[in-house]
Image (tube, rainbow, N blue to C red; front, side, top):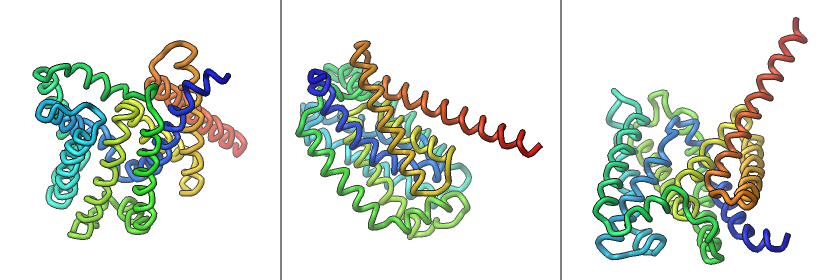
Length: 280
């Protein structure tokens, strides 16, 4: 038991920190219907990270790599905010999908010419949860706490815009500004989370717990309780599963989250079917 705690203790803390902030952000992402924004931003951040490795010989996870990644995310945040207010012929999700494809192509190109490029791809996909140390935990806690506090301060306008994101309102300067702030804060979290957990687990934490909560309730507080509960259970289960079977941690957590979503859907469907039978 002590050995398991020593090996999985810090990774579990990292999972709790990531899922806490990503779960909250996921509720906004679902309402805005920009499901793939985290993958797009992660790929864009990867372009910056690989470019930093090629130009400055910066290792993945270093301050230089993070700053280059965040610089690319900053440009993307401004682009997404501006495009939604100016282009109405296509959805913002389509724009995000196109930017993801371009960023993915750029990553593959840079990987092909960068020394040790395949290691960057492996790190981006699966992260380094098993090797996370106390410094990573402290950094994540500070950054996520600051981002969470920022969202607390702007919770009212952010919720208002998320609730009416696709009805044609909030496309003026105010909407662009709040969109830019949202994507910047999201980009900060994703840039750091991908370096720790990888794209697979970050996308899973962002979308699946929020989807599970939306299946059960529309009340915000209950949604948050479901989001964090499902993320904690899946994190614990995924870590133990990966430890026992010598499996990758990120895919294991994503697998458990997917199973939770299937179970939640079956429960809701069964309950609705039972209610309909009782009415008859």
